[in-house]
Structure formats: C-alpha cells, structure tokens
Length: 260
Image (cartoon, rainbow, N blue to C red; front, side):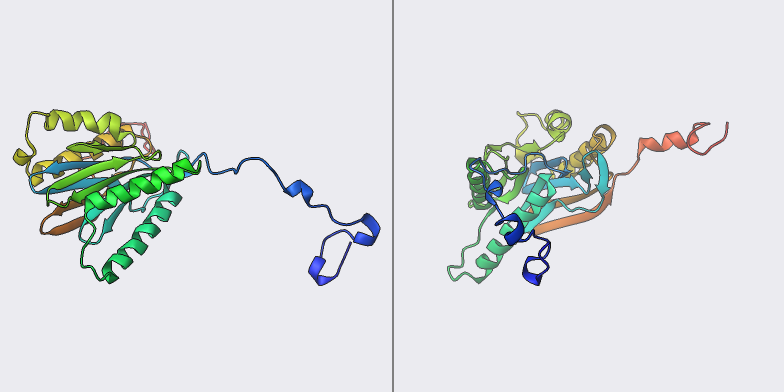
C-alpha cells in the first residue's frame, strides 16, 4: 500500500498500475430521494368570519415509529400568513430556510410592500412545481392561511407536484379522509363564511385533531394551533387533546401491569 500522507490507503501505482476511477462515472439519470424517511401527518385549516384557523400535531414519524414528538409544523411568515407542512420533515426545513431568507429580504426592502398570504402561496407553488419539473420534488403538501391583497381570508394548498387548490376548509394527509367530512358536516357549502365564528372554527379543528389522534397511527395528542385575524397572528403551541377516551383502558382488569 502507498503510505504517503496524501494517498494513504491507495494501492501503489508502480506495483498495481494507475488508479482507475472510471467506474465512479455514470451516464445514467440523477438519483433523488423517492421515499421520505421522517414525515409529518395532517394539517387542518378552516376559514371563519374575519380570519383563518390552522392546526397540526407535533409528531414526526420515522417510518411507523413515533420518533420526534416536538416538531412544530406551523411556520409564521411575518404578520401576513401561516404555512402548515405535512410530508418530509427535511424538505420542510429546506422550505423554511427559503421563507426565512425571503422574510429578511422583505424586511429590508425599500418599496414598503409586504407579501400577503396569496403572494406567498403563489411563490411556494412555483417552487414546488420547479422542483417537480427537475424530477427532484419536495415531498410536502402545504397549506397557506392568511389574507389576500383585498384583506379577505385566504386559504389554499399546494402539493409536491405544484398542484394548487382553494376551499373554505382544507386538510392534508389522512385528514383529507377523516377531517374534511367532519368539517363539511359542521360547515356545509350553503352556509356562508360570514356566519362562522372564530370559536366555532377552533372547536371544529380540535374535534378533528381528536378524531385523527384516535384513527391515524401517525398522529399525536400534542398539537399547535394558529389563528390569523386582522389584529395579528395568535399561535398556541404544545396544546393537549382533552377528554381522551383511551383512559378507560386503565380501569380494565388485566390491562398493562394490573393483576387479574
């Protein structure tokens, strides 16, 4: 072996011939992450009279393991909007750095205009579509909640393909199957948003989070909730789901460490 410091561990060229590194080169396509490892589950949001409420639990699962129980998946952007993330946590952190750099540029800009939630959603959907077009997608489904340029409540989603969708109430992940039917029953299409109060919206989100905690194996009973109104953004972190029905198991003879 060659024991000169610059080439430690390599075979000697005068004995074995020059090192051939051609096998490292490839003409095939780039290989990107196709199976996210650490993921977050549902984000739920509802429009109400004068604002938007959005919530997400604090769990990041490593496959089926509930590995990280203090991951905040709601990101406040200035005074304008809240972005809720589901999907890959590392891609969420990448988008969060993009938002942070944009927030700094906005604060130091000379034009005096601030991005609203609709602007922010348009930007993020273009970022997701660009990465999808490069066959290197960001494995996230996001909700953007806030106000548009006309000071009206705004709520819209964008997924890893750059597909966008707007509705009075939205959910990602398993919440699209379990939470949306609950919200449609509480807030039917014929009921105008002007009749929905802030208290009703927050109560509906808590009910949905409780159902997801019972039915979604990738959810947690700790969550964050944000309420965006014209007065500002109120964020409640490390909230706990109350009145948990799982407590009945402790009273069953033979459960856990109890003796029959």
